[in-house]
Length: 257
Image (tube, rainbow, N blue to C red; front, top):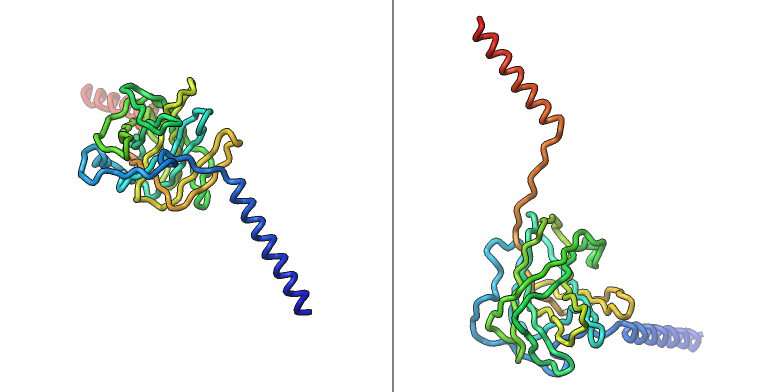
């Protein structure tokens, strides 16, 4: 009887080990700019790495030593990065984020002055995972060179004002560079040591399923916006006209008396 129980336990352990190994093999690799060696951030204070004073949520680049590809180029890494935020009680009017331009396969800096196009999408939080899409923006933005580097790669700052604000207290945001020409100069979202230590990522060539990686954050700040004006309904306009008309009639009668 003991031998039978022991055999069953061994079989169960073997099954679980094989299942975990298979799961690990199914999850695609998280592509980063330092996969061929560790890059270290500078040890001096450089401007352009801080969130704006009116930021609602701050996850600035602190101790950055890597970047994670978020680019729809299809030869090397067609990957999108997601990160979460919480506690935003005001309207979101914009976002600041930091990144690198990385040439593959050499992993050298390929930034040239000019604008890039990004898709920025906000999602609901679904028990700690990426939920339903709430609002998306396609923006054209020219970055600022901060003067800081991660190894040989320049850290670029991107400041974006949304054409229309949104309100989402807790959620996720994804940022991906549009690369229709399939150029081998990819955007990598710079990491940070601040945050909840979990990001999501997709390998878009493998079906777009979202996977999660622990111990990783990317750098961004959510900027306060102006709430949209509250539209005046038709009944309020009509009531206002009637009150004005009544006031004019009363005044006119008093004048005649």
